[in-house]
Image (cartoon, rainbow, N blue to C red; front, side, top):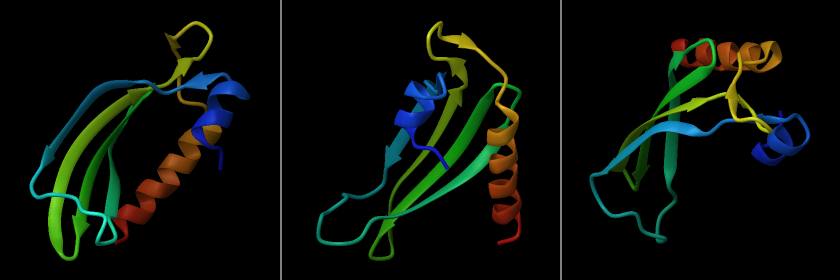
Length: 99
């Protein structure tokens, strides 16, 4: 329920990428809506990995994978994923497993 800005400034939690890779399959154009699907690949103690697929007009445009780590924003030291955020991610995972 919080955006990146609120998470960082008001909650003191950062989520920098430790791994990020995307492969473009076809051009992305402003002429069509970009449909993006994000799925959780791995939920760790302090990290979260995603898979991303984006399509336009029925054509796959790009795929990607990313891993972010939860850190205390002030010190940039790794921290466990807060329980309320973990619960939200686990709920998202349960919805993706049901589809």
